[in-house]
Length: 160
View 1 (cartoon, rainbow, N blue to C red):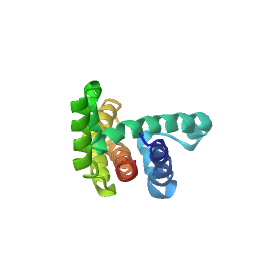
View 2 (cartoon, rainbow, N blue to C red; view 1 turned 30 degrees about the vertical axis):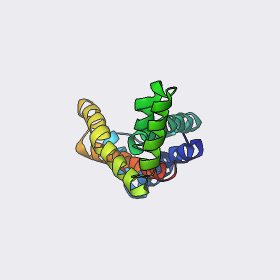
View 3 (cartoon, rainbow, N blue to C red; view 1 turned 60 degrees about the vertical axis):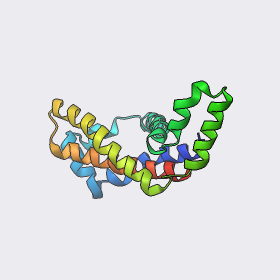
View 4 (cartoon, rainbow, N blue to C red; view 1 turned 90 degrees about the vertical axis):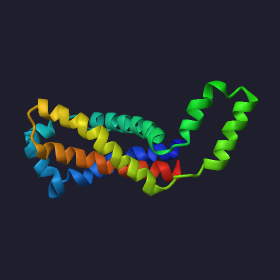
């Protein structure tokens, strides 16, 4: 686990959010879709909001690493047997042969987009439907998370 890279990736949702939800980008449309007003937005403790969101983003970057870096599955599959010299030799051989395969920003971003469409969309879409939110709400939020996961996945896959 490369903690500095995971921390860097965990900052991405905040940066992307500042841009995506800015009033001159999609912020006004998002507020309209959510039913929020400027007055309702002012009542929050922003230190808590940003602190908790960073912790959640760090959790996301940790699990995203297992999605975008295929080599983590070698260790996962063999970790209970790593004390066996033959298993350790197999692991070392696999890492020597495949350790750098598919370790690009582009590949990580692809997996981030896939996660956005096949994990975030079903989860947020289902919640939004039961909350009686419209498609504008769904598309704004899923678009944000798909872009964010693409950037996070690219960073993690390339540099972690």
